[in-house]
Length: 218
Image (tube, rainbow, N blue to C red; front, side, top):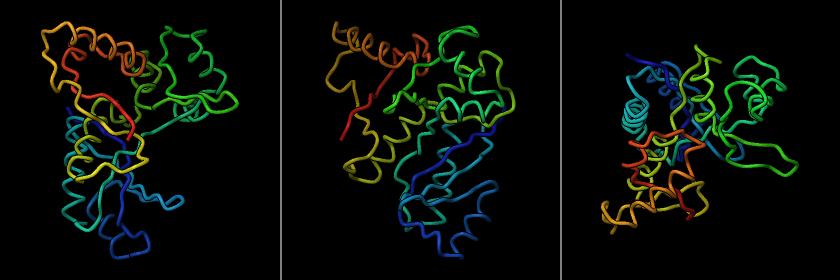
């Protein structure tokens, strides 16, 4: 069964002032948009596919084939606050705040990935989406790219681009290099992963047992 996946790629070398390139973009992809904010160019896609990975892979191949001079740097992580979540699911900010605080709903709302000065909490939309969908708060929104697929995709992009760019949001490095899966170290490592990421993706034990990558800063 196919689903619609919505995501944005951060790109370099794509000229938004070039009308020919924009025309090619809009004729190559059915549902696409391009924006530039303070020199940061993102191209947003809605793609029908059988999986998140397939949606990303097929879009990347088609984009690179059409625009070989442009570089795809990474997936743009979709970060949201209480107000943005409320807008997306057509609820009031106060009702979403109650869900996030565990005062309403089933509890176990994903932990925020950060807190801004002043106390504004920030979540990755993909983690919130999973929780909302499981608890029947949404049914007809485009699917975001899940956390682990996005992380794996970022690692692939860093690898094919041939360099790690200073200041990027995340660099992903293999965790299993030099570690035997049947060693005591692996058991300890898995516990660390589970503690760090379960609140974000609610991963199953099987998924955690095959984790290959973790986040680190460049």
